[in-house]
Length: 255
Image 1: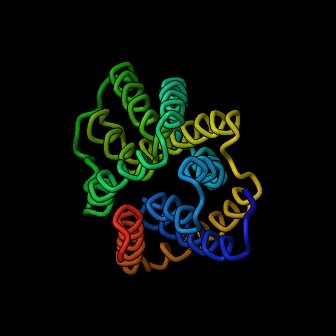
Image 2 (image 1 turned 90 degrees about the vertical axis):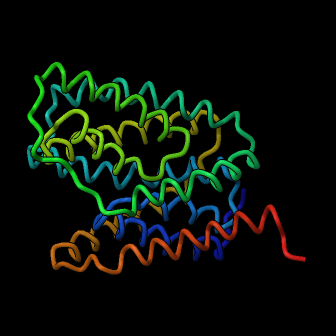
């Protein structure tokens, strides 16, 4: 499929915005995936190419967390295995769903996912830590289930992982954050491999959009340090409402 300048002008600014939002409050996937669909790409190409641009940003974030010592590698290593299996399976399932079926799924799932990502979140820090084995087992189960979801669809993965790793596995917030980045990188790469092998990734636009996403992530991190997170949720809501209306109009065109 040929990419036009108009499509680039739609995708790149929104991917920058997605990175900006993700760095401040998480949930950037709720903007990045709709960005590709706004530009008129087929659904599977949207999901596949979004995995490429997301992988680029997540790689840098994971390296940053690793250098800071926030990744408990003994536990995270096992989670990587189950996350890879889950995401690979999710991506393979997604390939069998027709475009129209995916859009129906989005109409149902998008409001639910947006509600859980945008609502005020409380990450438990008062829970008694489990043993390393107990934490690892719960983490592996979580990584598989969320990996399955991320390979199939994806938006909100980081938020869901963080909530489950702190709430169910009783991880410390910093370790949960680090583990979340490793798992999310794994699920992105695993799904990306499946989509690449099936020719669904639009590589040039994925690379360009990924660079914009990284730039937005960098600026978002700087803004967050200065306490500028207030405008994020209204912006996300505007994008989501427009995207939701676009899908509805595709099914029920006016006139």
